[in-house]
Length: 86
Image (cartoon, rainbow, N blue to C red):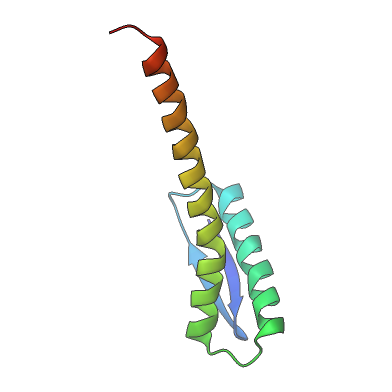
């Protein structure tokens, strides 16, 4: 499966055999959406700066969600530990 990403006026083909086709397409759509948003706000970014900002904009919310999920799971485990006798 391959998708085409447009970065700073250039097109790049991203291929993956290990990622689900629908997931790869959704990721590419998110990348494109974020690229457009950032490019409108910061039209003079270099290609590398743009890529870095896109990556951070996509990764930070995922990390935040991961941390929140881990904290919720840990709280549940702690509650179970407190409820169960040793």
